[in-house]
Image (spheres, rainbow, N blue to C red):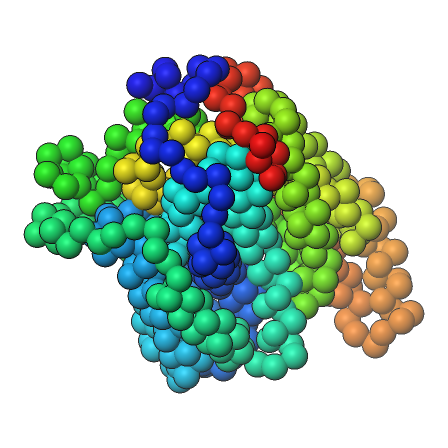
Length: 531
């Protein structure tokens, strides 16, 4: 079966999907896409304004990251679970509950008066809202015929990548124009409309309530412990010296126990919570691997650029958003082009161009200086946005395009999970490299800025003289402080360059790796309108 899915020729037999789609289903699908956009956007829209939330809730610097962590942990558990729930309850019921629950939790988050309430509401928001994301991918490949993939695949690819990219921009504008409460209140009216549309219009499938009697509670407990603790370890590990921290160490143990229980139940339960058989399809296995790497690039760069602009350039959230909107614009422009190309050229070649484009953008960033601003970041951002869409569309088609309908729901959850886990692993790796290489470079640079260095002493003398002439401060202390700051800044810059170099090697390697995939089956029918 696995071989058949990747050789040239016809895809596996599957029930015929009509080439025409009713207006009702198109509107229902668009409502689902918008719901997914809200759920993904909510991660980054809040991350850009954590300092405002921290001030509003009088939270400590140790507590405020949990506003993000609680959402991510809850979401990463729901995404793979959604496949089973969708089969049991139907897409209509699951998506309506997810949209309504996400909306209610958003409204509650806006009313939070302390950090404990906010963490609980964010966890509910992430868990319930996480059910919307895989449902959209499954619906796209269930109700639309292959001839329409050139339209549908870029649409969901654009939403999945654009939402995290523009999140900091949108969050910065909202928190500056109104208050942090509106980061959550902005979801309420659209959420009500999406939930209403989902209940009224979705008719893709029927529920199978008998599955409730076979629900694997032990499997769910194992999966929650495994994925939830993994997310926590990856989130907190880099900043807490990994297993040296008691909380991270305990979570690592719970994660291991949870993994054992989860995989035992996956292979022994009559109806496992997550069906891993989709990985026997080679296309899906490769697509998931590429999705994992795309997660590293998507979430890694969405994190790196703002950190650079905030730490080195001193930008606030609104200025960062204005500097980084180019990537989102590039994605928006490239999405329809990638849809057309996906029906005209070899998907492997598309992915290769995308990965090499990504690598070129990150290689460009290895020449970073402390003066880089909007115009210096313009080309890397355009390469990032265009390359993301050139990768995302063929990856979606390769991973989900040849699966039989009965496996699509579970497979969609797994596929989206790989992207989220890629983001979590990528951020942990990036943070670890930034911290370790920053310390390494600072130590090396400090060796050259010692009292025995003639150049360092000359620089210090000049700075001391300058401070004596321009300020009434203790000139010698001010000069030493300034010189130390310059060393710290250069060490930070060098650590950023190391991370970008590492990402360049990763994406260039993936670009070469695409030649190892056998040619995917071409979709029946041609471009956007079908034939």
